[in-house]
Length: 79
Image (tube, rainbow, N blue to C red; front, side, top):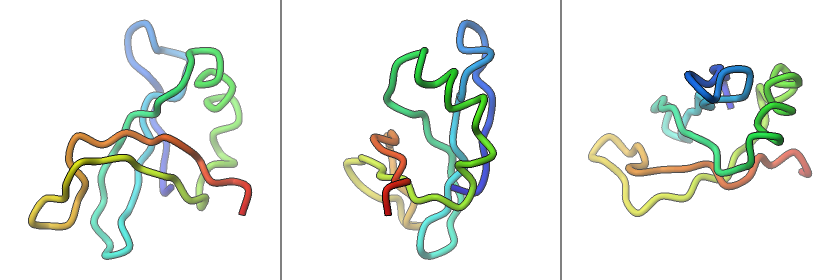
């Protein structure tokens, strides 16, 4: 995780997207599969997320090696 963005609209005040980078150095942004309550908690503590690993679920990669139709399913802060 290299960055965070606040949610927009009804998701304002919550964590909207994570800015991620692949092992090959390709940057992309992804939504997070979670509840509004948990996303609000993550936004308050978002500076702790920088540098952590994330599990991203996706069906395939682009030619650049970036996941398509992706979603973060876990923030790996247990390693």
